Image (cartoon, rainbow, N blue to C red):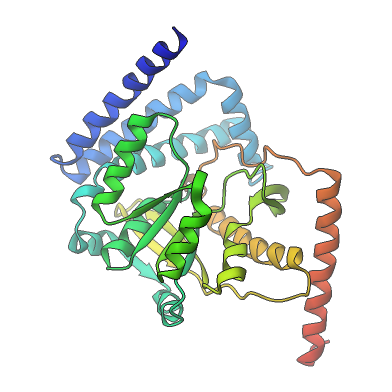
Length: 330
């Protein structure tokens, strides 16, 4: 009986999304964004009814704004829901997005870093996050003729998972399911493709604890390990919505330097700290465009993690001091 009820619930969740996906093929973008704002209002209304989720979402935002009241943070959360309602509608519009339309919708900043990475001919690792419209940024590179593969967690609702993947595939975007990612990622990097990885979700395992808004966050190490193993350049790539024009800026940051301290754990920490710092800076710039409702700080460090943090930080600081001596900086 429980399984049957679950299947019914899955279908009830799927059909409205399927209808929206069909509407997105025929309605103008402006109309779909208005619908998206309405969906965002619905998200926010449901969130207010879920007291526990509302509470930890506000607590998450307090890491950024410790001085703000609950009312002020709730107002920010309303903007977050509106952004992701519009984000959802933009996802449904991807199947009719052409390269010409994309060029009107997205402008790139830092393309010279992308071209520099392209010259290395080793594939690329994009460090991304649930920020701005990360899906649209991936599609933009695909429409420009670059093979792009996104590492994505499988949605529990199979019908919704198939629907979302089918829309991504129409733009030429490849999908790697996180549950079986390692072999596929290495394969595509060997083929000189781009692999995009979101680094902003709680990592319950295979993690390193990195300061994020002043609080240690369990962070996936995948980009660092892949970069060290394959030599593929790592580029932070983030998208920012411009509400005034309903367009996006895709910012490509410089290639991450992979430094060798002599300690693998410290090397991984150094890379992931750099990537996390860039993400934090972007969120401070546009806080309403990040997914605050995710339990980012859920996994807490054990004593062994704290000791590893101290040891690896000491190694990093020692390596930095040694480098300064070599270049004559005191």
